[in-house]
Image 1 (cartoon, rainbow, N blue to C red):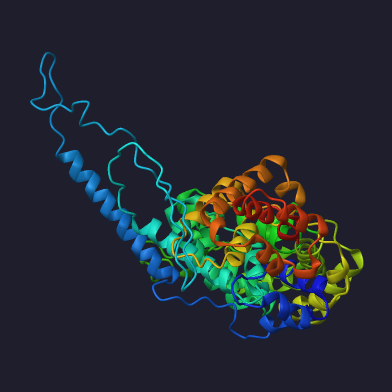
Image 2 (image 1 turned 90 degrees about the vertical axis):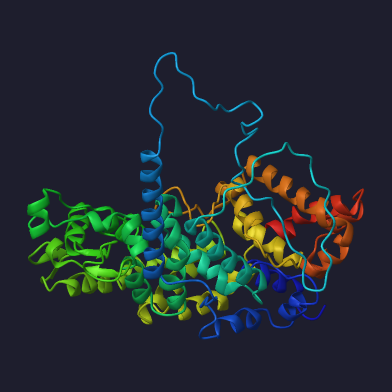
Length: 510
């Protein structure tokens, strides 16, 4: 292999999702110019956008879920009206369910994991496991269909990406500005659209623009309950006897911008919460706009000027909040917080202080130009010389497997089920701080055992048709350790060798 195989491994694993199998030539291309290989993907102006036929915008999705909820409500009401009268003591119904009529088990909500073959390849035969008879599964409703379609589009894009650095940035920022599909049907319906609309268009633009798009997106407003926040002195607040909700304001300052210890106080949180009262979205009645669209409700906005981080913001409605966000976006604490998180994600759990300082300086100098910050990271020597000690997250592990095995997903079931098993359900963190980005989170013994189980499952299906020694050359080439190469060569079967490859340091670490 030409030039620098170790740097090629860094380019593909640290900045991307690993090499693709088949005839992609990723490792050879990365070895010839590692930094250029990463930068090439960052040079595409619209490379982060995800426009797939059938994926709808947030307002259309809101109308769909509201219509679905109305349909469910009507069905329940109709069922309640058709219920037979309660039996009187001593009476029996003319018909009864016998043991043979009763279902033997509940319908499974978990699709059978599957990975499809790459174009031109025959799918390996699988022996079905004997299962007890069970009734047919209920058809997916519109919320489930939408979530799975959004997930599949994301999985396909990431598996097919040349390097994957753009999709790594999508995953990073989506976790930084996280919402949770577990909040309810609206949140599940909007999770993918939120990423497509608020994250991807600003991935290599200004941080301030991404911040504004995120905080005004209905998915974020719903997730952190800002539609319920009323200025105490506003018309709505006085009429409804309901007050301020500080959830969104607190997370903007603590998790999205300044960070803990970033120089703000509880008074600042309260002030920001007052400033963004009225930031909401139109509901099913479409009173203020199309259902699911961002609206500013002046009746809910707290009147009067507010002091935030030592600056007075006059009450000029929506513009008051937008001005406050713009100032927070360029605050020195925000620059340091974002630089630290980026370096921790891409380089090391303990970010090199010098590299953090340089990214922080670029952030300040360019007014939060995220492309400039990312390029500074790619150009940093520390990013190439630091040991590859970080463990891939479950999402990164699964995507890397799909890329190596050249299996473009046609059904999201395998990925969604595996992410649930490994503790990183798609778009569904346990809290607004997202999933942890550290080895302590992902390198625990139980988690690694589950990865081994999934690796063995894949190997049992695909191992007969693949040569793990050739795959090792695609994954790491000359950068593969002697120990890993010997371990794979000494495996008792191709299936065992493939499972060992998927658990090797060259595959698990970035």
